[in-house]
Image 1 (cartoon, rainbow, N blue to C red):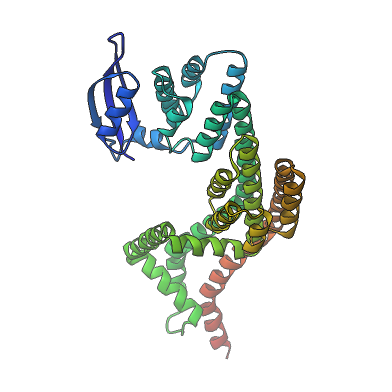
Image 2: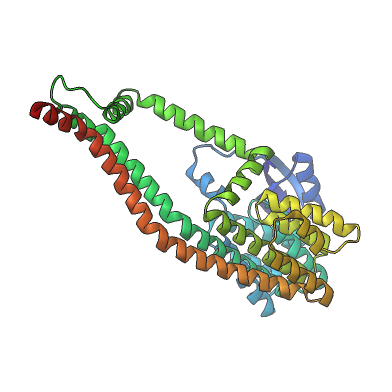
Length: 403
């Protein structure tokens, strides 16, 4: 939704400015009047495309920052400090630009009479639907402090899970980038030097011809390489936004050797942890299933959970439709079934999350130890193959002279 800047007068005649996200200008005016303001000016905010400040303001807030915000807010509320004062104090303390701006605007709106959850809804880029739903349930049940504590724990667990996955993928990515840089340097700078060493009249082997052709293309037609790379990346990004492309990529990720199992376990752990947090916060089972499925970010599990939600709404148990989806391991299905029968679904979901999070941690450590030597061997073989291709004409010339 677009962002609108506004100027209003409060009940005491003081001028107040701020920004709100809304569908149109009329929606902004209606909301401000509902808060008791006299609207003097509303216009759509213009964000410069090349502004570094605007880029920082729109940068996504990290899970660690959100977790710390929840923990600090819960502690201040438990100490008996009013919500508005807590928000204004945290607005001065927060360092993340996007979160700081959002908290300050939320504090202003809450002071004007808007509920905390409604104020959070004006910032969907910072606070997810899961976050807003949990806060709303805490407000209704009068357990906002406890709910914020659960949210902080949930966000911290999500951060730890993502950090474990990142630790397993960063090293291969760094080695891959290093390999590409080495190959480009050799192709652009080293290969032309070797060409001068080739004896005249010697026939070049096929590997050498391929290397020389690529080197010449990179040096003389580099713009074509850049254009093709840009088109490829843009095409992939557009394809990922399409439902079919997103579904295809989700299936590919789960079928990757080793990494597929890691992603699968992490997704199951995240779903179980989120669902347990939502149910424990008083969210109805149907709404909790929908929010937990969306929070995983995986279209396959989202579809499976939405189908399970429809069947639960028809009166069936949760375990049976999840089993029919084929996405969840048998152990998870059995524990969910036992949790439904014994009334301890939340505690068993947390055990599932703890188990799979531990599995992810163990797998990431094993992957790192296994990939280090393999990737180093890969880089050595790549560079060695290029060197051999460059030296082949020299070897061929020496062989012909001996003959």
